[in-house]
Image: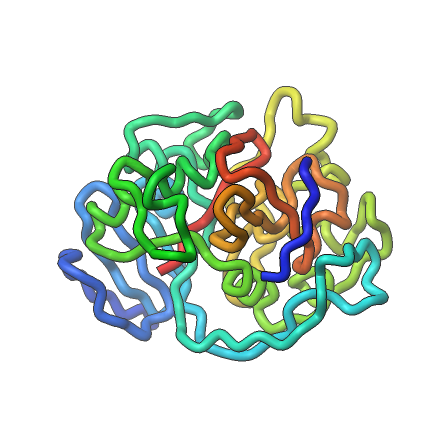
Length: 288
C-alpha cells in the first residue's frame, strides 16, 4: 500500500419529499434510495437498525460542531510521523453515514456492484475516489465541490436533491473519535500493534479473523461490531474509507481494513493511494 505524508442526531418522524435540504436538528436522517423520501428521527428505532437501513435506505447521524485534537500524541503505540497532533474546529454540524455504503445501496444508485466479496450488506469494495466523485469535475476538489453526473455521488445528488460528498479527513476523525482522545473510539489505547483485545469488539481486522478468511470472505456485514458513542459503526477496520482530503492524484483514506494490523486501525492513522486506484480493501461512507 502506498505510504505518503499529507498535512492536510421517543422518535419523532417527519417525512418530506427531497426537493432540497433544509437543516433539521433531528439526530438521525434516513433516505429511501428508491423513492427519495426522507425520514427524521430523534432516536434510533426501538428494534435497532433493521436490514432495510443497510440496503434500501441510507441512514445518517447528525454530528454537532466542536473542537478536537486531531492526530496522535508522540507516545501512541503504532504512531506514524504524519499524525501531527493539532487542534481542529468543526464549524458546522453535519450528517455522516451510520454505516459504510453497502453493495445494495451502491447498486440501487448506480445499477452495478463492483465488489470482489459479494453480499448486499457488506461494504461496497473495488471503488476508487474517481468512481465515487468522477474523473473530470469530481477529481478537482478542493478547487470546486462539483462531481460528475455519472459518478456515485452525482447520481445520489440527483436522486436526493442533496449535496452529499465524502468526508474531509477532519470530519472523518472527529466523527470516529466521538469525543475520545485515545487510539480507539471506545476510550482505550493499543497494547499491541498486531492483535489487540481493545480493538476486537470494534471492527474486523487481521487480528480477529480478517487475515485468516480474506481469500474467501473479505469484509463483513456492516454494523456487526460495537458502535462508537455517536452510534457510528465500523470506523475501525472492515474497509479503508476514502476521504476528500489530499490533492488531485493522491487521496487519503482512513480507518484500516479487514486485512490491517491493529496499529493501522487507530483513529489517527492516515494512509492513501492514487485516486484512480480501486481495491477490495477500499470503501467509503458519505456526509451531508
